[in-house]
Image (cartoon, rainbow, N blue to C red; front, top):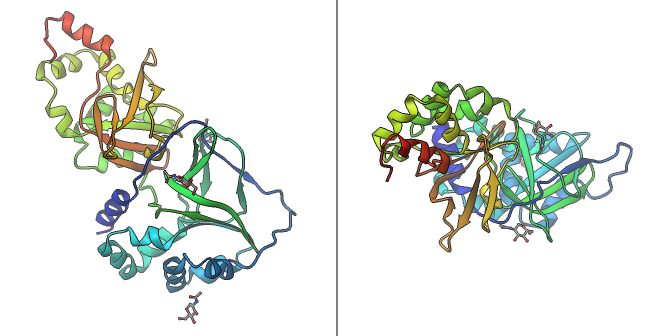
Length: 324
Ligand SMILES: *[C@@H]1O[C@H](CO)[C@@H](O)[C@H](O)[C@H]1NC(C)=O
Ligand SMILES: *[C@@H]1O[C@H](CO)[C@@H](O)[C@H](O)[C@H]1NC(C)=O
Ligand SMILES: *[C@@H]1O[C@H](CO)[C@@H](O)[C@H](O)[C@H]1NC(C)=O
């Protein structure tokens, strides 16, 4: 039930745009007076947080946040909640623990302001899961939390800051490897991560983006190619690392224009993101079939094709195997 809900929530978080300089939050110097109305008054006055107010109130969190010494709240708008499937919202309302866990993922027990350009930055939420901040764009810098657009930042309230966001964030269910091993459609890549010895590489990078072919994608690969990779461990590693962008967390919201990224393979071969006018996103010729699955150490996108670097294709063809 919870897993299903989380999937629905993940599916509901989509959009896109151009990534460049990742973002940042700076800590407000202690002792700075924090003027502004109290949190509840500010939210009521703004008029677009009615769902959040009522959900927070029903869990008792409203009082907790209102009376906390310092708080930064990422507040989904009424529209953001309205975009959730009705069944998801009902499920949330009917499961107090789940609701509390999701809502407390939207608050940080400290006062943070977004300022300037920073790299990946993580804030610890009240439910002890990291909230990942990123910034995109050159001229106008947009900030996202867990890939969700922050539409109004740094609204001063008595005990901290309120940030308006246009989606509901879903707490990550573990690191990249944990999530891959739990997903039904990623069994092949999970087993190749083990076979190639790359599990720790993926686990240890704290800001990583992985584009993972699903089992169906692997079924389309010529069996001779899979056999070749099975007996050439270095080439297998290269193929897997070609699906990894290290030390960068790239959510779909940052993928609007054609951008290229160096991969983690030996030559840092570049992969390119493209978006079509149907809001589909591609990485090279593979389509993102599931986006923005947040992990504690980065983000997963599921793709429908296996990407093979040109150099490895040549190695394979040298063996007389026709790839095509
Ligand atoms: C919270 O709930 C209480 C009790 O139902 C109600 O009196 C109060 O007005 C609510 N506060 C907000 C901000 O919705
Ligand atoms: C990556 O993540 C770590 C831990 O969350 C953080 O301290 C560090 O600043 C990040 N590095 C970059 C380059 O963003
Ligand atoms: C994100 O929010 C900013 C500020 O409201 C807005 O200008 C921008 O268009 C939004 N981006 C997306 C992709 O929704």
